[in-house]
Length: 355
Image (cartoon, rainbow, N blue to C red; front, side):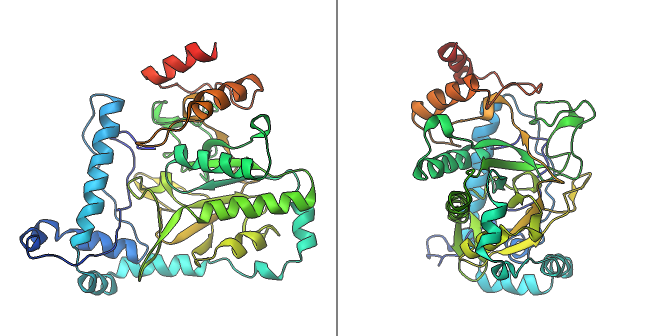
């Protein structure tokens, strides 16, 4: 989900280099500065970008932000890979960040017996974050359907998690339209999808396996650097990669997470992100996933507006955006949170349909 102009943005998008045709050679200078950003992403030390100017409207912000992000992604096609790699080796701060991540790497869950996983799994709620939660919710709903769940049994919701500051002073965690001291990213949280495992042990293990596969399928391999989100234009600590489960990195459920991490992304023990101005203690790190203890860092449901929403730049069927949302409201799965709701025309039309 794209953020308003004053949101914290600290990670630069990254895409693989391409060969440059003679017709495009003259334009390389225009994108020379992109190599510094690519180097930072490659070495897992994001740079802080200044806030963007104020916007006229939320729809204008969405189009301009997406367009700018796309342009930034395309610009990296012109970066020379050798130059980027050379720059990365000389960036001491980047190396320090990479070493810090490596020192907290998670591993060894394969030694846990499956019966221990089956005992821990039933009824467990787990959250997954990687980029915009609009599109990710749809993917987890589809994963639930593949597991045989009906629309009345769907549990996947969007929300916020992973922040060291649990809630705002008035008990709210809100999107950017809330009061400044309730905004999720300023509290250290990121956008996530929370889902629930079945009550039966064996079924719960298979649920977790399907959800983990769905999660790791939402990355693509960048040769020589690792795995990147499918929507890298949404960047910064509010969009960082994370998984939250009871017990965190010490949970027996980590065995399944590690088994489904087929591309070997770094799984990093997280303590909860603390924001100090624009600086994040646990930032948006390339090719890495923060692992959180959801008992200590719980999930906070997002506003009704964000639930069962269309994707960023693409639409989902009405049976999802209207039918599932209406059913979720009726069964109390989603409800007002006390945070401001966006009142775009599409949401106003939904209000009429749902009433």
